[in-house]
Length: 496
Image (cartoon, rainbow, N blue to C red; front, side, top):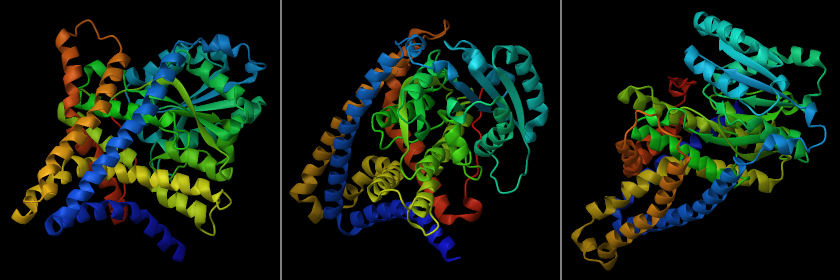
């Protein structure tokens, strides 16, 4: 019982820090506006420096990405001894998606510059969607089964005890249900590379060759996960500008973290050793954000001797746009809130690192503190920075008394803040240019005005940072404080 109370305390801590910041800014603006102005200027200056600092990592990753997509990884792999011994185990969970969506990643798989007979593909459906799934699975098997070493269909039973319905429980079941088959093949677990893909994931033709090369040349490949670049380009020309801006922010956030291994968790579609997956007990079936938790499971299980290896080869995914403007915006908000529910990792990390029954107590203290700081600072900044910088930052200027308005600090504050904001625009300009260079060719029916909209859409960034950044992140952390019926379940993004 005491442990449960301690865990609950750490669940609530991130949200309390967020609301303490909001309340402090408002209180200072009302009662100590001079202090509030100092705080806002310092906060903004810190973030401008941070943006410029992150730009360095962004550009480093960008040039590595541009270089990686030009490499013939399959030709390079052939120079690696015993590269033929590796097999790929690919899990594709689906729930209520139409056949037109499910078919696309299989088309991308068979276009891979890799030996398809080294691939074991699992299409993982849900009993909750059995009628739709059985029809789709039959079509997929009929069209694609002859391409691969094997194409396996699994159906995740509904209402299993001790699990949360969602991607984590589905992939957990699929991997565990097929373990007997893997054992029957007699392949060493170390020679099987697992990829857990969202159903809209279209791999680059060189993905599996690059992944195998990274795995085969890694000094300890079972002590690492492998994270590609996620680019939301599948339906980018059909998506509305707001959705495009939000989706691109995810890609460029991932770009910055790819060049900072100490911050890089697994995200969305990722790969790892089958041995590691078995060692850590498969993906967590009780949580929403199993994609990043699987990295932490490895980190804890191996006492900190685990890393995420950046792969600068891309996978292509859908934005949440489904052709209906307002519904797409609601879906975008729900997706960001689900991702922000990654705050659930914080109490789990504290428990594993410091509680008596924690499995990661032997991890070096420095590593534990680094990962806790990265996690805490990440979810805190996500919820607070855009609101403090773009909204609350001007609150003390509007609430100041005549005496405060007469001070030199007050007179200069608008100029200082506007200068800082202009400096931060450098990052936005760089992102806009890189984003434009990443765009696929538009369909023939698109006109010149679509290119103009692609440029003008970046004016929406301040709004999207708040509505689809701070607010859903604060929403998720507030729900974690409230607990009970307010806790999030797994929401499946609609796909078209």
